[in-house]
Image (tube, rainbow, N blue to C red; front, side):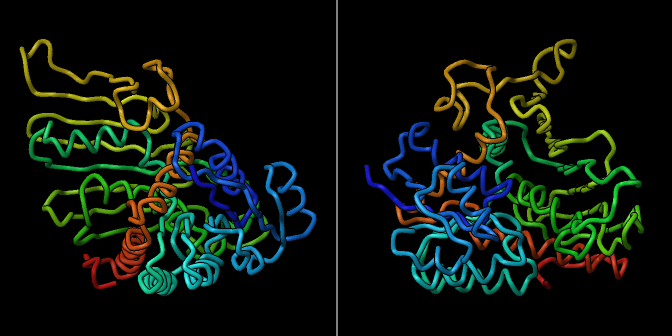
Length: 367
C-alpha cells in the first residue's frame, strides 16, 4: 500500500462528501493507494480551520494556489462552484497532478475546452464527478444493455427532477442567476451523462427551456426552471429527457426507462437499490416487470455489505468515485467519466439552450 496526499478545494456540501469518501475508501475497497487528507481549502481562514478540524485534514488554507502548489498534495479534488473549476484545474494539471472535478466540468464550453486541452497536454489523470451513474443498480443496467438482454433498444426516456424551487414564494438566491446555476447548468448534466453511458452520444436534439417563476422576492430569475428535450442518439435510438427543479414532490428524480424488442428496464434513484426488469419470455400470464434488489452479485456492492437488499446510499456513490479515481491514478489510465466526457455533456447543454432560443433541431457536434 502507498499513501497519497489529497487536497480538496471547497469544504461545503460536496467537500464534506469527498472528505468522508477519501477517509473511507481504503477500508471499503482495500485500495492499493491509501489517501491522506493533507489539506483543505475554504473561502476564509476561519472556515478552513473548521473544516480541517471537522474532517480530519492535516492542514488548511484559504488560498487554493497554496493547496495546488503544495508538494504533499499529490492529487486535487475540486468541490467549488463551477466558475472556479477552470483556473484551479489548469493550474493543478500544469504541475502534472491528477484532478477530480465536480460536475459540471466548467461554467461554459470555453472553460470545458480549456480544461480538456490542459488535461491532454499534461497527460495527468482526470475525472468528473458524475456520481449517480455509479450506483450498483445503474452499473447493472449497463451490463444488461451490453449483454443485449432486452434486445434492440428502441427508446430511452429519462428525467432529472427535483422540487427545491417548486414553491413560488421562495426568495431569490444565487441559484436564480446565470445559466451555470440554472436547471440546465445544475441538474441536467447528471441525466445527460446517464444517457451517454447507457445509450451513447446524442446526435441531434430539439428542446424547449422554460422559466416557470420569472420573479421571486428579491429579484428577477435570469435562468431556467425546467426543460424538455427530444433527441436522437448516434446509434439511431429515439430519446426524451425532462429536467426540472420545480417538479413538486420529486426529491431525487434521476430516473429512466429503456424499451427494447425483447424487454424493458426501469430505474428511479429515489429507490436506488432496485432495478425493474421486464423480459418478453414465458407464458403471457406470467410476463411483467420484476423488481430486482441489488446485492453482492451487482457491481461495487459487496465491499459495502454482504446482505442482498440491504442497500447502498448517496455517500457510497462518492466512495465508489474515490475508488475509481485512485484506481486511475494507480494504473495511470483514465477511467470514465473523464474531462472529455464532461465537455461532451456541456456540449449537449449548449445545444439545448441554442435549440430553445431558435425553436429548431440542432446537431450537437456543432457546439
